[in-house]
Every structure is written in structure tokens, then in C-alpha cells.
Length: 295
Image 1 (tube, rainbow, N blue to C red):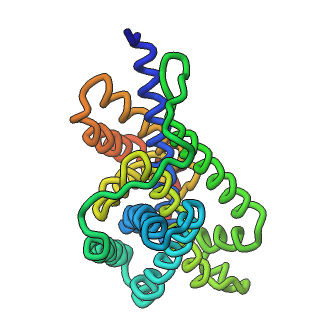
Image 2 (cartoon, helix red, strand yellow; image 1 turned 90 degrees about the vertical axis):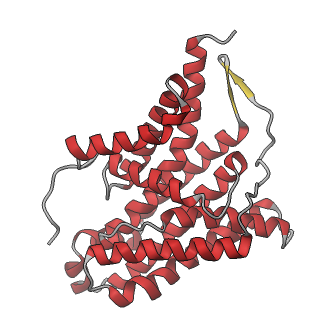
């Protein structure tokens, strides 16, 4: 018989796994918000496209899984760039709320096209390294969960190095905080925004690829995942990329514990209740600081 401690450990392991996905999606929200101060509600569709394009690469193009995944990441990054070029940039002087509505429209459009191309049935991707559970102090860890954690760490560390050690990354940060000053010193702000959409698409695609072997992938999966990623970004501090990862982990663990110890029917309610509490009592997020508008 499984003890309560083992059950809680299992819930925490599950929460860390799904929380890592929420964190990656929230990271995509923060990258675009830092460059444009808009919230891209098509981020969940980037996640969905990552999984479905990988399925196409495996089943139609007969590519090995690694090559199909790389193709999906590149294609979704390109889709993010196209979204900026044709949906955001022509109206860059519009209000933030108008641009947010445009991203909602883009989300609906991408979902509709995806349902036409791939249909409404769910697809799955083979597990990266088998499905034999790994015992862990009375709980079990799925091998795919380790892949989720590994890829999350690689992406977070890679982006940290990119923003801290490269001229392009530092230029993106400069554009985020002082776009006018950045343009005066020769930084192409439009290019940095374009790059942020590409990076956000690539990160979203990676999240969709690693979660597909565990939850399958279909045309409408991005809606709820996008909302959960948005919750993670708010909990950690919107505009603080690493805060999104912390928020995602916190959200995933609390959601898993609530679903396991109370009822799985409350899983989504728990996430949005946490979001509301954060907005009421700490709107700047766990890692954010109270600050004025950018000049």
C-alpha cells in the first residue's frame, strides 16, 4: 500500500514536470512582453504547432525524431516572425489593448488552420527514451519527465547566456527598457522585436514537443496550456523571464497537489484561483518589483 508521503512525492514529481512546461510557455510570454509590452495570446498555439509539425515530420516526411523536432522549432520560429511582420508591425503604433486583441485573432486563425490541416483527432509522439518508469523512493518517474526537466534547464541556461553574454541579447534588453535610447545608439528596435517573436515561437515549440509524448497533441491543446503559461508568467512576474519558470514550477506543484489531495476536477480552478490571488495581493509577481511606467 502506498503511504501518504509517497503519494505526495508522486504529486510533486508530476507537478515539477508539468510546471516546467508552464514555465517554458510563460518564458515565451515574457520574452515578447519585454520587447513590445503586449501579451501574445497566440503563445499556446506555438506550443500546439511544435507538437503537430513534429508529428508531420515523423509520419509524413519519415524523419528521425531529433530532425523532426528541429524542423518544428525552426518552422514555429518562422511563424512567430511572420506574425510580427504581418500582424503586429503594421499596427505598431496602436494601443497595447489593440495589439493584444490582434494576438487573440492570430490565435483563433492558427487554430482554425491547424484543425483544417491536421483534423481534430489527437496525435502522439514516441517517448524520447522509452516508457519504463524509474522507481524513486516509493514513487515513479517517467523517462519523459527527465527529458522535460533537461530541456527546460538547457533552454533557461541557454537564454540566460544569450541575454547576459551576447551583444544581441544585451541589445534586446536595452530595447525592452529604453527603446528610444536604444534606437539613438544605433540598435534596430524593429529587428529586436522580430527576434523576440522568433525566440518565443522556438521556446513554445520546444514545450509542445517535449509534452506531446505524455499528453498527446491536437489542434486545440494550446488554449489551456497558453492560459496556464500566462498564469506562470504573472505568478513569477510578467517581464521577468526567470520568474516565469519559478511561477510555472510553483503553479505545477500546487495544481498537482490540489488535484491529487482534493479533486482532479478542481485542477484548472486551482490555477486560476492562484492567479487571482497574485493579482490582488502581489500583482508584480514573486520575483517582480513595484515600478513605474517605462519612459
